[in-house]
Length: 178
Image (cartoon, rainbow, N blue to C red):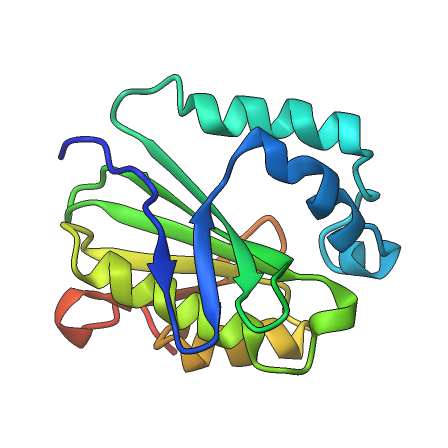
């Protein structure tokens, strides 16, 4: 599989824009609430730290078989950034696997933004040579579990770093689901 690149995607209310270092300042404010780290640990990044992180992400994976795809979520009607979605695409024995994640800033939560963004991402990945889409969800994070389910993923019996692996495979076949 050749490397994939993030491209601008649109949903009903959202623009998913490929990540740029210039997004760091606004995204630092979006991601500034410590409550966003309840299930993942850590603390909010400063604008400088986020710029450095975005430089690394936009440079791409050092492994040519792995694609790092990152987007910011822009609310079209409000013309502001509200979060991020990402996919890391890696080879596997069954075909390319996309590991996805999302985060929406606290002020924008509860409005279906994460669900709409995750569905847009999963739909886009479905048009690419990606066999399986997975997400790792903390067992107590009900909101993320609801987003994963709405995006067509199903929980499996597999765990990764204390989180449940959710999965959607090409053709709707879910391996290892419970």
